[in-house]
Image (cartoon, rainbow, N blue to C red; front, top):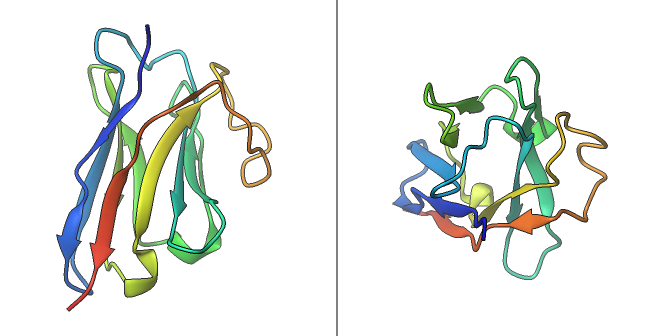
Amino acid sequence: QVQLVESGGGLVQPGGSLRLSCAAPGFTLQNSAIHWFRQASGKEREAVSCITSSGDQTYYVDSVKGRFTISRDDAGKAVLLQMNSLKPEDTAVYHCATDYDYYCTLFGAKTHFALWGQGTQVTVSS
């Protein structure tokens, strides 16, 4: 059974960096668009970024543009979210998700996905 597994979260000071990874052990992610979401305590889940299956199109919520970069690793086994210049408001549980499609359809509006990861905690605090 396919599972999405996130890793790379942790505690970082404001201005610091983290790199999150989304992988599907035993499976390739090359044929699916991958979305990153985050949910802060007491807040609604928010779409953060998405990369198409080919990797040639990426999408970001306005609040992370210029600070976060989504990419695929060369082996096609993971999707990475490089997060720089982190702010306290980036604190949240970050999840990756896929609907097994090629494109980032309805990025920011789509909420139902076939597969979700369990999430990784990112805490930005001094």
